[in-house]
Each structure stands twice: as structure tokens, then as C-alpha cells.
Length: 410
Image 1: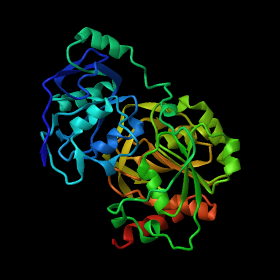
Image 2: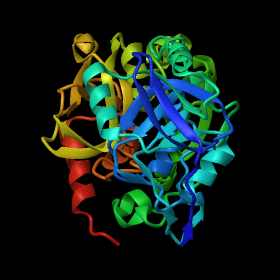
Image 3: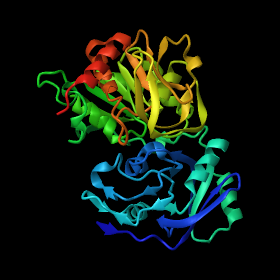
Image 4: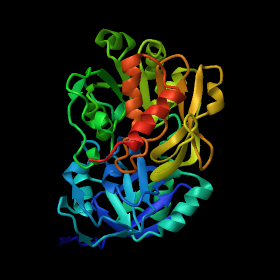
């Protein structure tokens, strides 16, 4: 157990509509200011995974939980190689870190990463404001070098998320092999066949188009016996065909999916020929490649407690989500796709499957990290698609989901 001292440096969060919130800066208090779209996450824990999720690139993250930082930072809990948020807003930064795995405090970690945080903000009022007015551009600042008016002016000139290709800034620079398996604590929950495939089972070669993928996604694939090759999102259709994978995975990532024209064109060319699974931004890119459209949500879905109904099986899943854009379900009519999952809070499309091609995608995060494990069976669906070459349907998904939920824990 160790103490972490809160900064005495004043901090401010200014929104483009003129709203100013004051508190105490922490993290990179020597940085002047940082802009981004201000969004909120309703998870009670998992701040480290969220901060290192590339899907948060270009955004100032607000946590609704009242105290953050009490278990510090653990080396095993990062989802990428660095912190990706533009800023971090909390009600209270815990003055105590208590976790045997912790290597440093959240304050020290953000300082090392060059990211400004602010505590002492009425996050309940802020989240209500964002729910009513919608996610908006903002700026987080430490110190008093800039006036309130200057902060608001900078916020109004920050880049809009609409039309912004942020994924190109977080994709991998070159192709590499991912071999890290799931952590021991994860193997207590999934099925035996999923985490310990038979020694003689076929090892499927998966090419992952990386738009800013989380490590736990790739761990799930590796632990299911897949040989995972992570490739830049700029990988062409010709390069994919030359690699000749058993399946294609399209990852999560930040920004407006409609701005990534080249990847959409690539997917349009290869979807008829390869079993394909997409998550989050990957879900949106596959939909666009199939002729669908996307739109920006008012304030997005971000948290580890989002309810989704599987329309193929009737099961309700509590899911982890992080997205500000969504696929228009009506735009997929005539594309050969059928809805597979629906978000129960607002009836938005949360997943779809092609009826004749082995292609499916979900808007949320079945790998969790953080979050519930309700939807990890979807990785088994992908493996089954690669094994059979057949699309997922109500029967196959029901069988896989039943095996996943009835398997004894280790």
C-alpha cells in the first residue's frame, strides 16, 4: 500500500458551448492543455484498460465512478503500448493505492505518459450535460496560463470526430505475429475447447486488420489455437489474397469509419472470399463495405454494463462497449445481412451476420477487458466459421452459446 499525493495545480475543463468546470490537475501538470471530444464511460473499474484502448484516441475521457485510481497501475492490464486518451476527468483521485500488482500510481503513470488529468469535477453534472447536449469538443488544461475565453476558443476549433480518420494514426506500422495467450484469470470462465484446443486441432491462420486493436482480442484468438498475424489497415486486397488466411479479423479503433475509404474498398473486394469477423469499428467498416451507412450517436455507448439481446438465440448479454458511431440497420436491407444483436437501451444495431457468406460483426467488445464475459462465445463462432466455411445462423450460434455457458469452470 502506498500514498499518492494530489496536485495543488488548478485544472479546468472547457467545453465548446462555453461550460467551464474547475478542479485540480494531476498527471502531466506541466503540459499546458489538450483538446479532444469529451465522452463518458459508465464502468466502475477498468480505467487502465480504457486509458490504453486505442479507440479512445482523440478523446477526453470522463469516468462516472466516484473514485478512480485506488488499485494503481499494473503492467499486465494495458491494452496497447501507450495511453491513448487526450485527457482524463474524475470526481476523486484516490489518495491511496492498494494492489499487490501495482507498479505505480495513476497520477505518476499519466505524468509519465504526458497526459493531463483533472479531479474534483462534478462528474455527475458533467455527464448529465453531455447526455442532454451530446458529446462535444473540449479542452483540459493545467494551470492558469490560458484564460477561460481562450480555452473555450480552442475547444471550438478542435477537430470534429465526424469525418476524422483516427485509425490510421493508431494502426500498426508493419505486419507481425501475435502469440500472447489469455491471462490465467480469463481461463476460469471460457469453455475448455476454447482455451485448451486439442493438440491435433487445426490452427487457423487469421489476418487481423488492425485499426487500433486491443490486445485481449488477439489473446482470445491465440488461445483458441489461431495463428494471428496483425497487419496495418492499409493492407490491400491483393496482399490479403497473397497471404491467403483462413479468416480475416477487423479490429476496433477510433474515429469516423466513413473516413477510411481504402479499407472499406479492400473489405468490399475480399468479403466474398474469406470468413470475416469484425468488432466495433470493424463492425462499421464491414457494414460500409456491404453497402450500409453509419451515423454519429448523440453521446455514444461507453461502459462495461451495456445490455444487448442476441436476436438469433433470444439471450440477453451484458457487454462492454466503446463507440460513438453506429451502423444504420435499415441501410443493410437488401445487403444479404440479418440483424444478430440489438442494444436494449436504444434499439440500435449491435451486430449482424451475412446470410450466405461466412461474415459477421458486432458493435461491442466480446473480449471485455474490462467487462463481463457474456459474449466471449463469439470468438468460438469465428473459429467455427473458419472450420466449416459456413455463415453463422441461429442454430450454430445457439449451440456454441449453450456450450460456452454450460461448460464447467476450472
